[in-house]
Image (cartoon, rainbow, N blue to C red; front, top):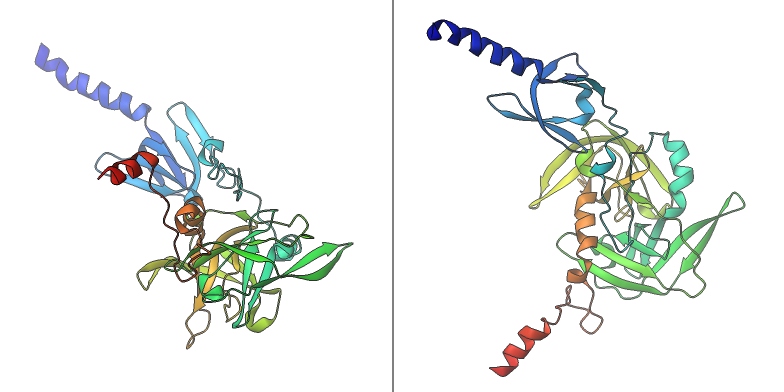
Length: 322
């Protein structure tokens, strides 16, 4: 009698597991059934029995759990997916994804936060990340330079007024990542328009992006294109590749998505081709900012790109005792 009931029991257990299974409906009408292990801001992790899949959120139409369907809007990820990344308030990321808008609208809003960085050796671009005047540019824009000026376009009565600031302090530099953080310290400097930092990991290939910068000194030039790839290996690093036109003078400027968030820092192009521009992913910039003390510029030794901090007092005492 026991043997006769075993197949029935197994069937019931299998049927019950199917009833509790989760289903992810994709935008191409396909569906994946299994157990959801984790939900992240850019992907859903699902166990389908013989392997584990990472499903990008921008490919998901809806999620149907065992107790019913749940729609997923990739423009509104779970609030818990965007914890504060910088407790010091140096920069800000969007707490929830913003709606997509046209490039025309975004340029009018963000143009004042994009600046021109000038040195005796040339010029580049940059963008302000903090109302107090902190900004990001490329290291190669200010390399071997100490006389730096920043030109900002302030919005006043519906018009843009150009102003040049001369008191610029180098806060941190990372030669190997080609990043530099500066600060405008002019006494008459107002509160500046800032940008929000986005999430380059959440980008999708083919997504529209645009750059604002000063190619060949032509300030406030806007170029639009698509993201060609997210992980182009160049010189041992991974870059965003875009068809948005990048030229000398764009270096250090922002690459935006259509939600108005900076997703990359434009820094180079292939000179013998067209539509082959590259940008440093914004995740690398966040890492640079979050660890800025390790890259702090030492005014006593301008040739040294790093400032080596003093060891903790206990370690220092032990060394002295020897």
